[in-house]
Length: 343
Image (cartoon, rainbow, N blue to C red; front, top):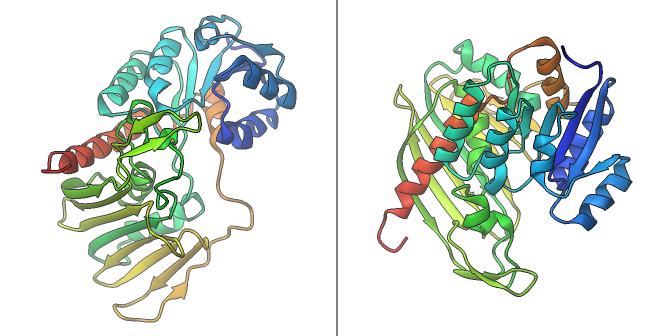
């Protein structure tokens, strides 16, 4: 029998957990975050004090083994997602894990297998958030065939985060911690996949690491193998092209948009400006698509997770099968560029 109060243990309390998950869970009646464990005892204590969490664990295994905890929220770096998830599901706990799902597709596949072995438990990946307010509008236009034949999907996301060779190392560039996750590739692929309703096949990929070694803030030098710039070409079953360009070395104003081009017009989502534009015919002047973003950014992750636990509603954003598809695409891109001479 389900307890009246759902008790959640936090494993990892990074920026997104503090900004999103903790406030989200605290706002829900009948939900209590009872335990937290972070990378150090000191940081665990700080989070517990700031958010009024009564329990602190010394290790994530304590949280998984605690019979008084119903669900875990995993906010660690990707290198622990698979190990914690598999253990938590085996212990009978619902799992909400931060994106990216895992370091690579084999780890994601192990997570999916563990979830399939426990269909009574909810297993959810934090969804790609940037397009949430626009997903219904874009998906509807495509489903109704208003662009007719889709010919090209183009994703562009660039920043200057890695342009400075002296910038310190972060977990996002450390393959042991992040795996094959590269820049914003997986996050944007998941969003486009929601629109298109299918996976793309990787045709080719090219990437570069311009600063092969960086120092952690502690001074420890580490080899950088995760690309700082990446371009991917893919194909959908109907022949439409998928073109993705992600860069951390583009100085100047960042670019952040997704375009869908069809035989009867196009869509352009300016992600940074939170605006969706449509050209009704090829070459026509774009007109803004009315999408109500005043109510927020579409974030319902914690509410959806709890609703699935309480009602048995299937996970919509994002289930483990979808997360595994994104990780498979990420691995295929990695293999496509890493197998080239000089990679």
